[in-house]
Image (cartoon, rainbow, N blue to C red):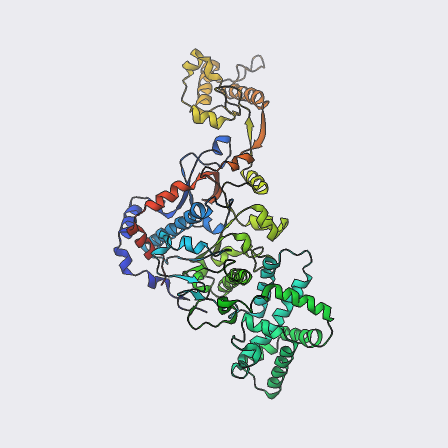
Length: 624
C-alpha cells in the first residue's frame, strides 16, 4: 500500500507560511467582525417555487442554499438525462463548493489552533471520461496531490488485491459479479463461485510466504502469487490446486513455517478451505456439470483477464514503467482520478477494474475506521461517480447496497450521478434501491424523461394544500398571494373605514395575517371592553377579542378549504421543462431545504473567481 501520507501529522502540512496568506488574514478579520458565512458551502440559489406553493421547508427566492460541514457527508445522488450537463452543473458545482468550504474551514481551524481537515477524492465513471472534464477545474489544477489511475504514460496503477484478506476478496467478488452479470434471480452460482475464489485466495496467501520456491511455477509466471491473476490461474486447473495443497502439507510436516503461515493454517477458515478443495472440488464429490456451472460464473468476472493488454497491470500486480498507488492515498487526503472504465479495447476488463476499485475503496475505508477511528473524524474523502449505474454493486456490507448505511463514521461520502431511477433499479432491484436512496439524503434532479424518476422526485417534494385559479387577483395559496401583495400593517380605524381589508383573495389562505389579526384584536378590545362575565344575570357579556378572531378565522378557513385539495407541490410534468434549474433536496443546519435550485448562477460565480484566490485555497487542501 501507498504509505507516503499515511498517519502523517496533519499540522506538518499547515505551517507558518500559510498564516502569511491574504486569505488567512482576511478570515481573521471576518471572525473579529462576527462573520462566519465563509464556513458554509453555497451550491445554488432558491427560486422560491416550492415555498410559494406552501412547502414548509421551501427556500425563499434568490436566497442561497448551502451545505454545512456535516450535511455534505450525508451522501448525494443526482439524476439527469444524457446531455443535460450533469457534470458541469451538479458535479463541478458541488465539488467546487465542497473544496472551498473545507479550505475555508481549515483556515478557521488553524486560526483556532485546531487540527485542519483533509479532503481526499476518488473520481471515476463507468465510461472513463469524467477525469478529463474535472482535471482542469480550479478546485483541482492547483492541488499538488492529484494522480491519475490508468494505462497511459504518467498514469499510476493499483494492485487490486494487495493486502486484502481472502474474506474481503470473496465479498468483493460477490459485489462485482452483480454488476458484470446483472441481478440474477438465482444467486446460487455466484455464491459457489465466490466461495471457490475465497478458498483459492487463502491458499495463494500461504504460498506467498514461500515466494522464492513458488514464483517460478508456470501458473504464477508473470504475476504476483497473491494477485487477482494469480488466484484465478490457480483455481483454473485442478492440478495446480493439488500441487499447491501438497506443497503446503509438506512444509507443515517438515516444520518449515513462518508465524504468518502458522496463523493462516491453524484457523477454521483453512480447515474449511482444504475440505472444500480436497474433497469437493478436486476429490470428485462435485459432479462435473456443477463444477462447469461454477467455473462459468467465475469466468463471468475473470474471463477477460487473459487478454487484458495494458490493463493486465491491475490484475498481475506488476508494471515496471508505472508508479504503484493504492486507494488509501485518497482516504488520507490525496486526489485520485480513474481513467479506466468501459471505454477502450477491452470494455469488460475495464469495467472489472473500475468496479473492483470502487469495492476496494470501501474495504480500505472500513479498515481505516477500525485501525484509526480518530483520523476518520478529520480525514474526509469524496467518492465521485458519474454513470453510477455502470459501477454500483450489491450483495453485502462492502457493496453500495450495504456500505453507505454505515459510511459516515469512515469519513467517506458519496457524490453519485446516474441517468435515471430505472437504470439504478436494474442494478439494485426495487427494494434494494429504496434502501440505497434512503442513505442519500441530498438529492438532485435535472430535466429527465424517465417517468419513474419523475414520479419519485414528485414524491420527494410532497403535497401541499392548493386550489385552482379561475380569475385575476386569485391565488392558488396564501404564499403566492403574499409574494405578489405583501402584508402591511392595518390600523383599527382603517378596518372600520374600509371593510375590504377583511377579505383577502387567496385560494389557500387558512390564517389571517399577523398584522390583520393584531388590528382585529385591538379593535375588538376597544369595542367590547375586557369581556368579563356578568355575575348579576349569570350570562356573559360581549365576546372577548380572541373569540371574535377565532370565529372569523374558522369561518374563513371553512369557506376557503371547500375549493382546495392536496396536490403535488411539484407537478411531474414540470420536471420536463429544464431551463437550467435543478430540483434539490438539501440537508442543511440540522434540517433541509427543498426547491428548484439555480446551480448555474453559483457555477458562474466560481468561474469568475480569480486564479490567485484558488491558488491560496489549494494550499489549505493539499497534503503532498
